[in-house]
Image (cartoon, helix red, strand yellow):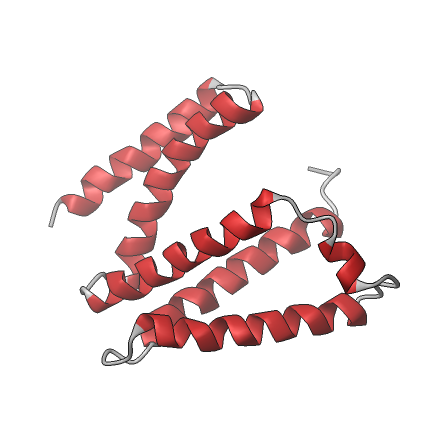
Length: 146
């Protein structure tokens, strides 16, 4: 553990804290508001914030020049993010609890990403990973016992 440093930890801490706020915000979208109308504001704020951070964090080049480096991924990511956002908003409107909904999606996601990592990125399928996913899936069974 002595090799772990701040540059390794801060991104994961940001993801965790952002995910907590994300779930709070997604659950707090007014029940009578169309999720897609809400997302237009979300993405306008996100685009503006991203542009500001591009310059604040010391980018010396042109953002338009950066756009010249685009491939398919940012375009598909935009579509996928809409699905992710609206999926959570509709899940909460349908009555999912923040605690169990996130645990269920995380366990299923962990199992799916294990396969994606193996198939697309040639990541090792180790016993630790397989047992970890099995524990997650057992957790789903435990959660379903009410």
